Length: 119
Image 1 (cartoon, one colour):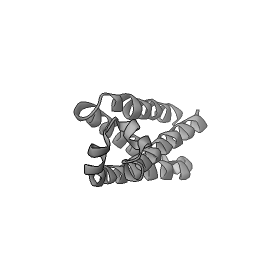
Image 2 (cartoon, rainbow, N blue to C red; image 1 turned 90 degrees about the vertical axis):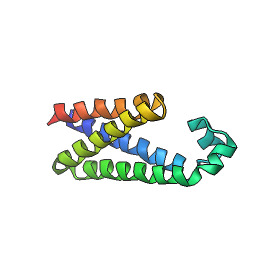
Image 3 (cartoon, rainbow, N blue to C red; image 1 turned 120 degrees about the vertical axis):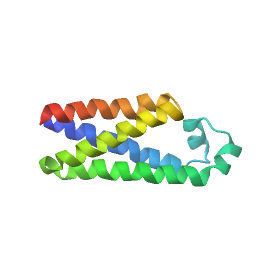
């Protein structure tokens, strides 16, 4: 179960790295616009804001992967960053799109429960 908790944490980290790429580098591309359901005009006018959001997702990814890299000593790091992802997902679902709840918060919550069960 411990190995599964590390893999789960790594997958949530990789997801947030992918979100970083979407928001920082692909925001105005067809791929980025399709992922977020934006028009070319909206994407162009909000690309700086999206890049800022992407940077925050990158910090989440880095923290999660750091916790995995630390192995058993990274338990508190993994718990902290999974908690941050859950809070960000809940806020995003309440203010931006309910989809964020299922893409971000629910996977992080499931992995957090897995991490706790594996302790």
